[in-house]
Image (cartoon, rainbow, N blue to C red):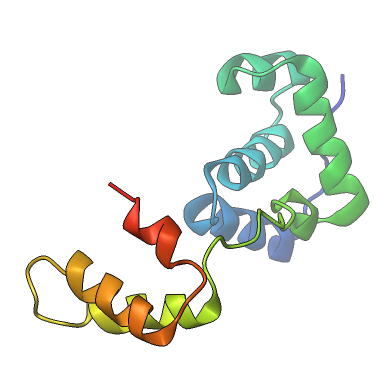
Length: 126
């Protein structure tokens, strides 16, 4: 029976904090699983409670044992590059602060004025 044993008060406090305020649902679930494991829940029960495979629950325990609370957080993901130029982004930021009800014509006009390469893409947007 695999479990997390002997958590320090600091670790419990960090796990409870992550469980309450983690930036993603996955982080909060992982922290909760570690807390439950420390309270005596076995892998099969954790897998059942969280609706995951036993191997997934085991991987969460491994991550915690190897890297502590920080290892339960999601890794940064790069994402794809923006399709519009920084200049076009600035025009959009400014337009969003404008009190104009329909700002699409305003944005297109400003982009065309600045000669942005993204004008064609924006003008075809719905």
